[in-house]
Amino acid sequence: MSVRSTPHHVQRRGCNAYGAPVKIRFGFTCRGTSDLPIEKFAPLCQDLERLNFDSIWLPETMLTGSFDPLVALTHAASSTERLKIGSHVVFPGRAPVRLARELAQLDRLSAGRLLVIAVLGLPDAHEVAAQGVNASERGSMLDEMVPLMRRLWNGETVNHSGTFFQLSEASVDPLPLQKPLELWFGGTLKGALRRAGQIGDGYIPGLSTPNEGAARKLLVETAASEFNRTIDPEHFGVNLTYSRGSLPRAARDALIQRRPDVDPDQLVPSSTNALLETIDAWIDAGYSKFLLRPVAPPPNWTEELEQLASEVLGRQS
Image (cartoon, rainbow, N blue to C red; front, side, top):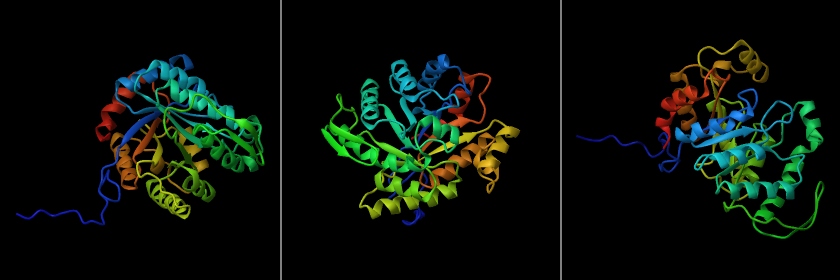
């Protein structure tokens, strides 16, 4: 009996381009007070750890009730032992030395469990004003911050005179436990994709379909190659919202406003089968890290997480 082998040019699900398995991991995103009171955040993290989710994630906004990532993740780290702690941290509007010091110490206090996605912040004018920066300068500000922070994390004493920041004999102590403390980047515009390839350690797109994600992954990798860099194939992730049943009208309208070119049901799966099919499609597109969140807060968080774990963690490798 002959065995039919997989052609070498076909990438198997959950494997990189060379056929080696990648680690598929599932984290969970908490939006802040729109999901639960801040006093309930630690029990949520403890449930995630008990159920063997990989990580907890906090998006950062200025005005929409998100938990401050540095405060809440410190609390999460002290309330758990293994759960990784991550955030989409808004860089523009912060001083690079202070942020480098805060993240280094949080990485130490969490025993090296910190995950960071560097973001510009929301485009809304009120959010930009709350950041205290000009919207048109946020990208350039981020580009100047990242190399400075990496030098500080490497233990250098930094002198710098730039467009936005001037440093004299700057250093941080203690240094991060992770070496390096990696920075992922998001975004879907050409400039964001190029930045992810040029200076990022990983990439996570915004509201996208798996086909769009595959194309953007290729653009990030192409940009990286132009700077003689490679992005670890393990370091592509996706924010994935799901729904229990039909999308609520408000959520559907919000999705149409943000992505009028895409059917909302392509962006937010609304059944267990649809969720698993979407996850598999993203895996086939080369993505292996998932940040899941329900479209609306459930009546009981523990029951929701237990159900979600039973549905998706069988794919965690």
